[in-house]
Amino acid sequence: MRSGHITLSQRAARDRLLSKWGHTFQKEPIDLQEVFGRQGPFILEIGFGMGETTAVMASEHSDWNILAIDVYRPGIGALLGKIDKLGLGNIRIVEWDAVDVLEYMIQPETLDAVHIYFPDPWPKKRHHKRRLIQPPFIELLISRLRRTGIVHLATDWPEYAQQMLEVCSAAPALINTSADGFSPRPSWRPLTKFESRGMRLGHPVADLIFQKR
Image (cartoon, rainbow, N blue to C red):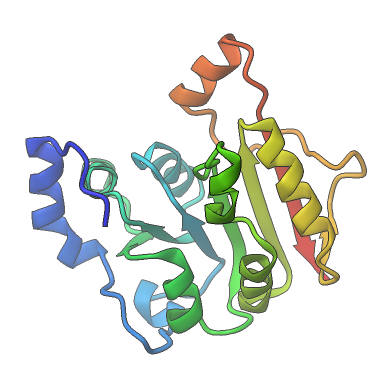
């Protein structure tokens, strides 16, 4: 778990609301329809930061059921606060490592999409092995996606973007939806304040959208 600096409001929201909108990690598969109390589409979001994008997507796509995974407690508190303020009922949070959640909790061929936006780029070469987007992880994702399910990645680190492209392109079960390799930002991914600032500073942002065969 990553604690970081957590504000009083974030701590209060986490303490008060995690039991309502969270799901405890378990080493058994969960029934997503039972968790959300309705049918899909079921969207897995890995690493939601401060929850800004997650809350906007949940608000604009009320039919989506978003299972959001993160270990950053200030961000979890912030997202819970947004859920409460906006009256969002289509988000559930798991405060745990994404690989464990995928391996133990998510049943094969149950997800309609996986969103991973701006994961830690681990820029130093000796730390590249810590990057999330690696062949074994992508194969695990693929196994949890329904046929025609989507893997949507985004990063503002060009070298990592290239690695993402190579890893996903090498997976036989995935098809790149863009002939140019990288895709324009789709309408469903909101433009965050962090991203807007980066664009003003000239930081390139790459979106990659792959579909399961």
